Length: 566
Figure 1 (cartoon, rainbow, N blue to C red):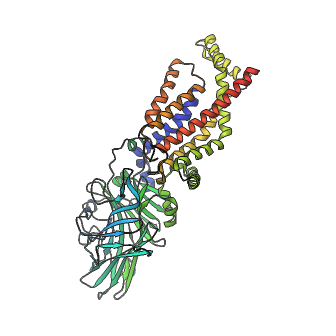
Figure 2: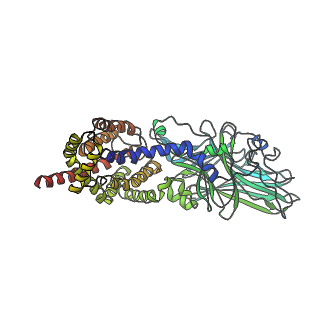
Figure 3: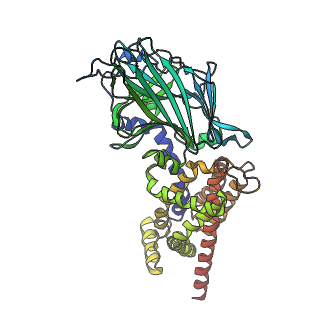
């Protein structure tokens, strides 16, 4: 039982959580795919798969529509190339207060996105972090276009556009910037693709403004999609700590859902959704398309040659009479996962900061951490103060646990005497131990249950520290200049290992020599394990251990003094 207390506190709070993450990564998608995606019949036929640049087949227009929008696997309607419109083609450079962006004149696709407020790395603060790029191996681009009905034409994400300038910048004193690209069909249909930027906002409004100057009605749809490859990461931390990279969608019916790369390979998504959003997520950042809230779109997935994963949405068909116009409008975001900003942009977008099944606990913890940081202006100090508050909240539970441990430690010589007396007679030994516990009024589970209650909070705090982009490149003190990366000199992991060793000395020693040796090895194992953890997480664990040691030492000393007086 003594051994179980330590295992519950350390192993259950951390190791089992890691095992759960690994299990989710390897098998979760296979179990959830049937429940989280509705696969349209006929989507996996060889004809669709043979057109790697196409989005899934769209249904024929019915009712009063004058013609039907063709299936987009029709090579006359949609290009079949898998090209991402690399920056070797002409690009339009856009600079705002938050973005430095490159838009390709081929298709008007977003090819490169640099986030001005986020340095590329701690050692490269001169350059901004690049979230999107059109090159392997970490390709990530945003594409959009129109699909026209029979007898009409429309610009897709591979159609050349004209532009008045190759460079745009948000002027000082101006709050808005429009970037227009132009296309005209032989029949006289004009399309203006407009990107509208607002100062202080990561939300970009993307519009296709259709002006029908032809002599007949124009019918078409708008589509937007995100295409990316699975990123490569060789860092030790990424192999130890699992963070989600893949697709996600949101709808009023099903709320937040992950669409993993494995699910995209197994089956194609095709689902009608009103409002909502689609996104590609990675650690700390995301790219997303946000349809109008009152608009019904079909969300879809596809996997192209070279394992290029596509998550997109296309609208219902729209008829534009001759001489009339229509504007397709969507929101586009490529940004850090700042919860307040994302929540203001679209309902549920803040859920992209994924705390898993403990979100209900993790979100208040993050709220408190953020408000502490607003006062002390140091994220490392905020972690220490937050840990102190959590320990204070659970003081009574911890006190009960440590009292039980102290009493068990006091009983260790007497329990050992019983073992020597009864030897291999387990029945009589257990009866004698229960009688001893009853006589001394000791609950052998008293040290375990309070710890079990606290574990969800500890795991929630772990996710908060792991998922919060606010900790990226956030300095603490001296040598720790980035709480989201490992301690460069391994000081904190060593302190954590020492604190674990001290904590073990305060706990009852396991009577079994083999168990004692295993427990003595745990600080070394966890020190190596934590060496590659983000220093913010290790700082939390060190602080928690130091506070636990102080509390446990005080309670143990008090109980031993009372026992000596008695």
